[in-house]
Length: 264
Ligand code: PLP
Image (cartoon, rainbow, N blue to C red; front, top):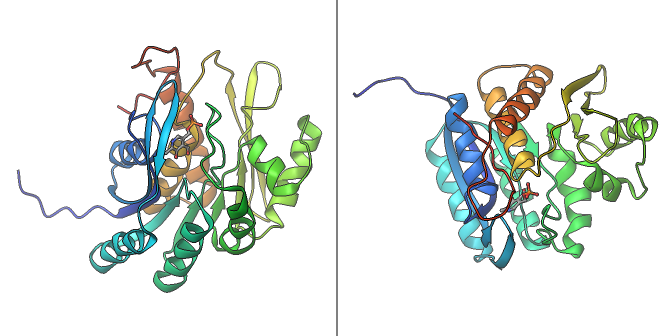
């Protein structure tokens, strides 16, 4: 039925997962489930299933730029989610595009290596991400290995994670959500939030599940919630709850036990 309802739009700039569990496929599912219109600018195509990444193709960076510019020319984009950026040329193109279009919110998932072990960002692109892109982020969402890389040291326990949260914030993002799944904190997973003023912990029971696409979904859900007018902290808390719930009710669509999220 036709409707004149015009939902806000969120744009994901990220890689495609042919297996449908992570990347833009996860992002668009999260956007749809949360009630925002999803746009995508694809940085890289992966030939991927629940067992791993077999191949990666990065289209010419001019074509990425065309996708981004075309989206900004038409839609009311309130938030941009950044995922797999592949190489330094892509990072630079995204920095230029963000400087030109100035979206209200930028959620940066500093994707480096997939859970399966595949490298999703060239080693020489890491300094461009850290130095040029990270200061443009409204919310930075590293997991523990990504935080260790960004800070250059190990984060081995809860006290180190509490300290790392502040050090990550000092790198230039407005707020940080440090994801705790890689840390052993008993039967809980603790996501730590800091926005320069207030700290918070979002706590969920640890599930004995190998999840795929959780990081992509979390960052997209934050972007969607920001589009809907939630404060950054509330957007992050609701997104953390969303991922915990979607993982608990997820399913394994392939031959491995790897579980993808159920968004509906
Ligand atoms: N594939 C793509 C295209 C991604 O963007 C990501 C994560 O951002 C992954 C795979 C990895 O997902 P996971 O580490 O949850 O398996």
